[in-house]
Image 1 (cartoon, rainbow, N blue to C red):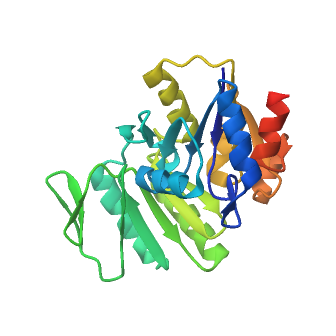
Image 2 (tube, rainbow, N blue to C red; image 1 turned 90 degrees about the vertical axis):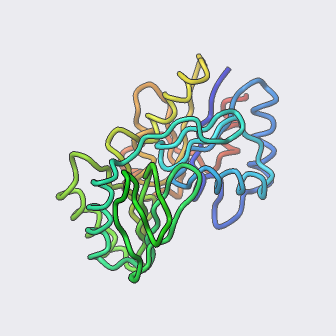
Length: 251
C-alpha cells in the first residue's frame, strides 16, 4: 500500500479546475489499494466541501498546513494550536501591515478580521467580533502586492520566528502556524492515529508551504512544474500533474 499526500490549490486544482484526468487517476490509485488525501492550508470543512464539489474520492484530509488532522470521515481528530496569547500578538502585528484580507482559523472553520474588528483574549480563547476562536490553528493574510506579502512574512519571522512558522502558499499570501505543526507533521501524525505502515509516501505540491513535505527524507516529494521558483530550486523531482504522477507509480 502506498500513500499520496496532495496539496490542493495549484496542485490538484489548477486554474480553478480539477481535471477529469486527475479525478480518474485518483480513482484508479485507490482501486489498486492505495490511499489518497489532501494536505492543504485550507481548513477541514472547506476541504470536505471542495472534495464533494469536485467529485474527488479521498481517504484523509489534513488542513491548516498540517495543524489539523482528520479522522476517516474528514472531521477533526487532532490539531496543533498557536497559543492564544501569542495568537493575539501575532494578529496585532499582521494588522499593522494592512493586508486586504485576514482570516483566523480553527480546525473546522475560519473567521474574517476586518480593520474594524474587535479582538481580545477571554477565558483562554481568542474573541473576534464576538466569535470564540479556539484553538487557533492558523492565520492567513493576503495582499494584492507580492512585495508587501514578503515584507509581512519577514517581519513576523523576525518577531515570532521561534514560535510561529511564516510560510507562503503563493506570492500574494502568508500563512502562520505553530512551529510544532507543518505538512510533514500532519502526515506522520495521520500514520500514527490510523496505525498505517505504507511502503511509500508520495507528496506533491507547488508552494513554499509545501516545501517541508516535499523535502522530508522519509517521503518521496514531487514539485509541480508550475511551482513557485523557490520550490523548483529545492525539489529535483517534478511532475506535470497529479494524474501523471499517479500513472508513474501505478505502472
